Length: 93
Image (cartoon, rainbow, N blue to C red):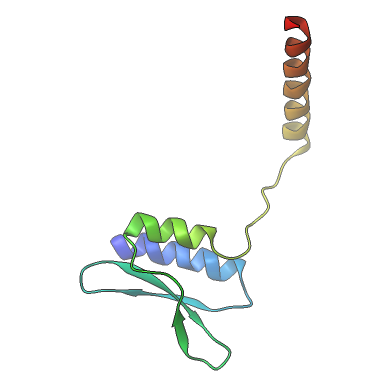
């Protein structure tokens, strides 16, 4: 169960960053570390020994990030909230 969460985060990273191949290692004491395949094919350790939660957070922050899709309705709602907030600021002054 522990490694399932870590391997799912690793699969997401490999899907986001196709220019590198990542894998994970696990120490005997249950800590995880991130590995990246170099151009020569050797694996280099690119993180320290991390707990499961720290490892998942580190993997999620590594590599390119996916852009969040925003619908037209969400954009209009955000614009409306901004207009209300700026109107409230003007009323207080």
